[in-house]
Length: 262
Image (cartoon, rainbow, N blue to C red; front, side, top):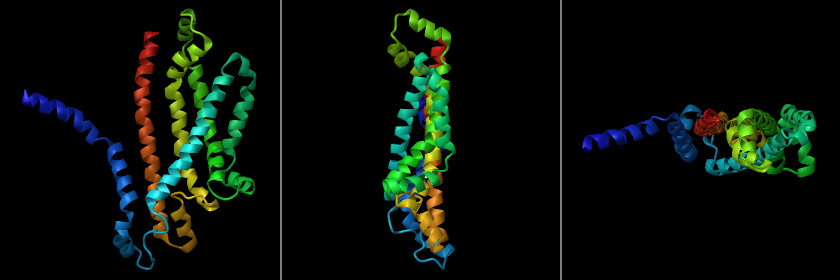
């Protein structure tokens, strides 16, 4: 009986321990908190650089500011993107679909640096122009995936919901959005991952991000600063992408079951 309990416990714990997400996340947190402890390593590798580790702000503070900018812009882009997708997939909004697609495409193709240059005179230096740039840049994948997800709901499922007497709002809330959730989340995943990397350029207009040591290192010719910021940004993006991938898998299982039942 004890052996069975141990075997069951190991079968539950081992997959979690072996998860790449866990180890990458632990590495990210360790570097984020313990980067100053690597001062001797960077001092040995770059003897001509002083200080060898970026110290103007703590890396934890840089990360919190960076994550806040990404979260704010991504939340706004997600809300607007899903609302626009719902609107253009309704009979009353189908005529506006080309306009919505064109606007979202313009936001994606317009370089974030150009958005920052145009936004700074109106919004000033700091985080606000960065949020605007991230919002515009992240809108297209969310709109496109949300439209694809909503249009991908099987007609038989829609007819069944209509036959049950559900109102238009109930069909959207209880049937269409849950089935479209994996596709919507895939768009959010792409948008957020792009935003994490793009947010670094916000440091050029006064925003505090993990890009701050990168641009400080470039300005002062201090390569260790560039490496430290770039590694943390990369790990942040990887951890976030892996987390979204896991959530997508959780969502796709019930969605597939719902489609098979329909």
